[in-house]
Length: 137
Image (cartoon, rainbow, N blue to C red; front, side, top):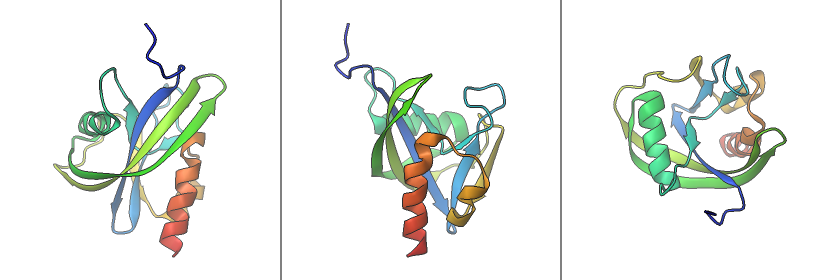
C-alpha cells in the first residue's frame, strides 16, 4: 500500500530555547550518524501528525510534556545512505516536567554562536543558520 509521499520520511524536530541557549542532543555512539548533534525529535509514525510525533518524542526522549509549540520551518534533506526526509521544525514555546536525558549520549544548552563548535547532522544546518541569524539580530 502506498502512502502517497513517494518514499519521503517525515520527521518532527523541536527547538527548545532557554536563556538564549538551544537544547542540543548528541546521538549515542552506536546509532546511525553516531556522536553527531541534533535537535530532539523523530520519525512521524503512521496516522500521526508531525505535532503529535514531536509531543510523543519529547516525552520519550526528554521526559517533558509539550504544552505550546508553533511551526518554525520545513526542509527536505537527502542522505545518500538513508533516504529523503521532510524535516518539520517546531519552536517549543512551553513545556512541563523536569528535563531528563532518556535517549542521547549527552544533551547541552548551546548558544547559537557555539553551534559551529560541535558536529551537527547535515539536515539541521539550514535551521542552525536561521537561528544564528535571528539571535544575531
